[in-house]
Length: 148
Image 1 (cartoon, rainbow, N blue to C red):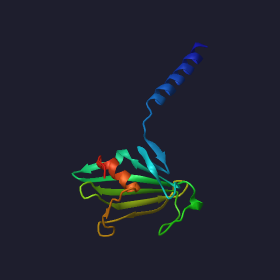
Image 2: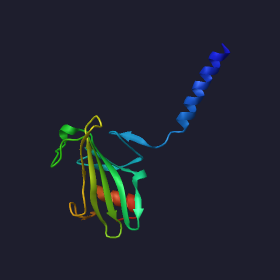
Image 3: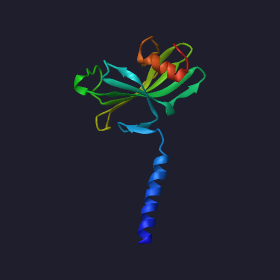
Image 4: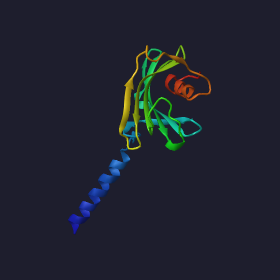
């Protein structure tokens, strides 16, 4: 009887200890990260988050990952891409010039399976200006630490 109680108490203690050690790292669409939701686009149908663990600063150039998750795929128009549930983008933002560009893109289906994966050079995709009132402005503020 004492061994059963000890075993039960040990199991419960281990479970409580493990639950207390949880991190903010989550997995969504098969991609783990410390995701911070920053807003929506496409009339609220696409949720946008930044992986805080991916933010790397090199002078005024910052690289980071974002995740765009489509809520209702049937309501979304997919232009120049296959239909996807989750898009993971690698980005560069120049904090002084206030420009950004996509460096890589991974598209995942609703099961987290990769549909496509592409990398882009500065020649493929040129830097564009960060515009007021856009999700890119929120990304700029989050990774550069200043207002546009």
